[in-house]
Length: 205
Image 1 (tube, rainbow, N blue to C red):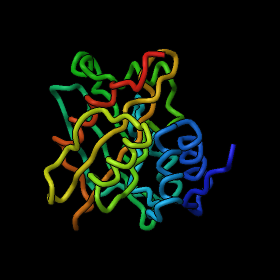
Image 2: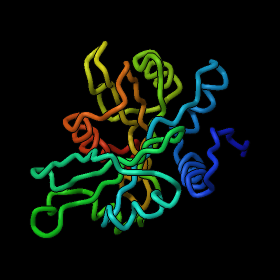
Image 3: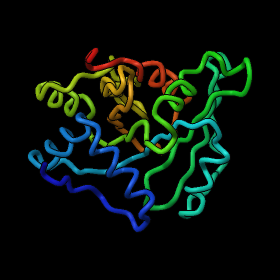
Image 4: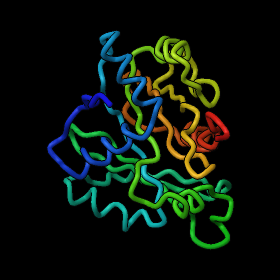
């Protein structure tokens, strides 16, 4: 298989996570091939990690120079919450977990971690200039997506997940397309809509 050329970072831990993700996610590999063919920029906007303890999982990223700037999103009705970690010149890292106890029973995260472990990225978001145009091209290449673009045209943040890769009969990883218009943050409502769509599988095999 042809080696995929990915943006590199001066942090082996981050590079390894991203390389493993692209090696396993077909939609992500298709995006890379299209980027080469159509001269799209290949920019990793952010990556997401599912875990059982944000505080424990964040230690590896803090050791790489990431820091926490009080960006926290909470979804008590859906049973999960997340923190955003940042480092200049690197993708933002979105680390999420279920609430402890009964409050977290509605979350899909613990089952995912139990099945796949906490050493893999759940998704990588690639930054695009025109999400609708990129989505159309990818669909023409046979990539399935989980629904419609979240975020209205012209808004500061627009996002969509691919249909999930399937491992062990369960939804595994997804690719996110992200369009930003002079905005670097995250909208909680959109993040939760994406979370719910992440269970959409591209096949039942």
